[in-house]
Image 1 (cartoon, helix red, strand yellow):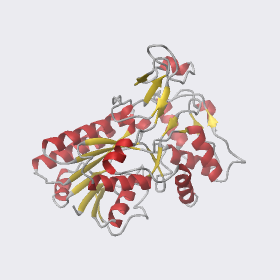
Image 2 (cartoon, one colour):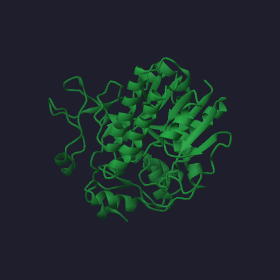
Image 3 (cartoon, rainbow, N blue to C red):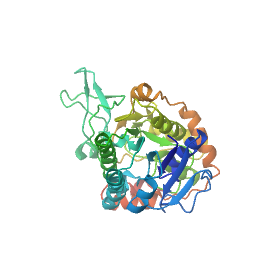
Image 4 (cartoon, helix red, strand yellow):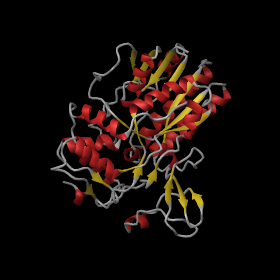
Length: 380
């Protein structure tokens, strides 16, 4: 295997994947449409060893030409934004679901012979993570909290059997996929379509379920991107990070360099073929802790502190962090970058990068759609 097509290869994650592959001797072709929401112009970090094709992943003729000339695909081209996906429904389904379907249709009907296909999936497909009820002594897979509970400010998940508090535990790949946004549904459909076509046409497919990715090159002007970038943008503009609920919800933050490495391993290791694999650190971090760390690292601790809104967004989950044992078993992968090291890398890049804080406009849009409740009085 030598020639790899990386879709979305000019983006945050894709560009790091491109660097990793080139550094390990692969010939890389990139397909990217330079989406205006992510890119103002052609990025200056692009690896000049790769071949770049500026086009749309929904362009059938272009896909056919590109797929005939490669041995493997690393598919990252997607619209990304949980909240935005709930009112740009058609666009997200068109790019993510239809774009992937068109690529698979070309593979099937043009008899494209691929040695490996890696699809970027997401932990968002799970919905809530896994929990444990100490009273019942059972694992639980709860649905989303209902609006009445959230309106009452009751953030914790409760056991449906005994009404006791549930404790978050590492989420395994066996957790039911209870996708709670159009974005999550599109990632779930991408994953399932790719695995299905892979089985039918004997193409080894690996679906990588990324947890919360952060690091350099994440678009700081994009208010629908990851929380590390959104918080960085606000901090750089001397505005407090806004924390929904009580700020104690937790996520699994994994550095983009680890994501790039696991993509290469997914191309090289056979044991993960035909499977969906969690890619995380296995360590939960609260949103409050994250905000405080970023404020400190940007040197703004004397001027800023996180602002807890005690409001909520429709469809938000409480906790989700990954069980990373399958990745270790199948891909010989363990995350190497600690949160401390990763945030240092992000901030070192972030202090040198321009950042327009567009969160107010994004929140106003979501508030208009009824997806954020009562946030205006907390904004400043």
